[in-house]
Image 1 (tube, rainbow, N blue to C red):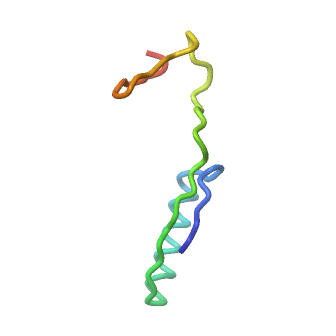
Image 2 (image 1 turned 90 degrees about the vertical axis):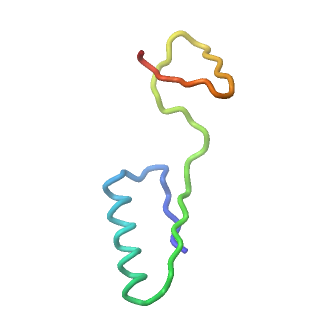
Length: 65
């Protein structure tokens, strides 16, 4: 299993790492699972106005609309 840390990874770097993992798996004839280690529940949206915002199940949130 390959564990990828998505806390600081960028999409282009992650894409390349996954390509390399898949190539190594194919060349060795081994199956390799890829585990995505996602960061905890952090909102990375910047400032949200007005605060606080209450979301209910099924609600959609589109900032800056």
